[in-house]
Image (cartoon, rainbow over all chains, first blue to last red; front, side):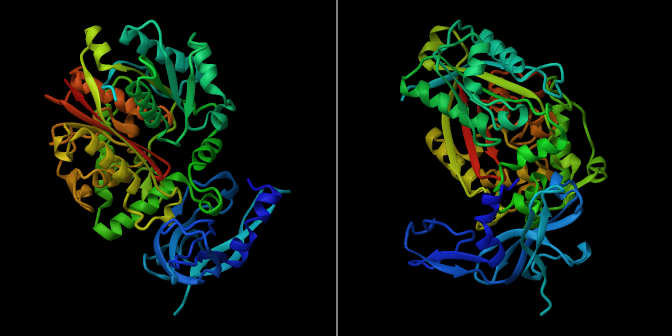
Length: 132
Length: 384
């Protein structure tokens, strides 16, 4: 359950896909990091993640956590973006029967969930099919 | 380092124990272990517990449980690595005895999971995943293992039926375990027709919510010999980490932490996968057992589904896995699981497993993991 400060500090990566990468080996992280897990270098440069990629694996959540009860069933997957960054997110605007490992996806800014009746509206990225 | 032996075990019936509190479950179990070991004092104790804070609203349980066991002022340490907490508690107890710091150490694991409702339990377990980048997007624990299963099926051709066979095998074993939460058999059809939780995993692919504890007593081998105990030595231990976010891993079908922990334990023990006579693994979901078999080198990458189908890991197979019933049938009180696995191996090596006994078992192994595989602890035991 995000408090305002916890929610606010994730906004650059969740809303604007901002991150960083290793200035030495070039590995791009998501979310941003303070040290490269591959070469241990601490010199980093700002970067943005690619907004297109492909689906590596997926599932359909039938038994959700409580803040997602209104949305179930819904699809969640891991995508590998065209810059090699991998991330987890919901897959929307797609019939479950059309989900396929390897399908092209793009990131879109959407409402992710709502924290109760008077809580924070939580936004971020979701995956949608990318017609080539 | 001194050689270390397990000289006593304690475990009570697992399940939905409405009438018992966390402290009562713990003390009953620990007293059984002390009695079994025949010791009247301990130098120190460890408690594996994933989330007593979220499950019963109680932190600071190391001292609480030492008090209710009547053992204050001995040092008591709580250990947390999600569902691998019990296995890691054992490793720390082993290190304390091996180092010479203490002679008699109690290692336990506990989780009281049914004092909260299903949503709260799902949330508590979900905190073992990356809250900001996995949990935020509505993924659940069955969901994470479903992502692994879907990828494993796509990459290696593992079938839905093969996953079901893991549950069927473990329930067949668990039906002979009087302490198991669900001591009954099931069928492939029943698994395949059970309620879908996260495609392709159904409810009978999942381990249950359980109240339970497990405890063992460790001491130096020389002391165990003087006490006239059967000698079951801890000959290998390994512990490793990986990113807790599944998406950060190079290959979601590969459990690198389990591979690394296994490698360390095999090297320390001077054993190979083919030397293991009986093995308890962390089958929190059916796909987990498949991936663990591959990471521990029991079979080649991608071959575990087929091996289960061919009966390699059945009670009468070449390497029986989860003779206790596994997490699937025995239950999965998360912090206790790693210690209970060790108790099953201890009983097997001492020839005390009754109907579940593996003939001539001399070397046994346990693998316990946390989250979707971000922590793993492996131990190897040998009967003298």
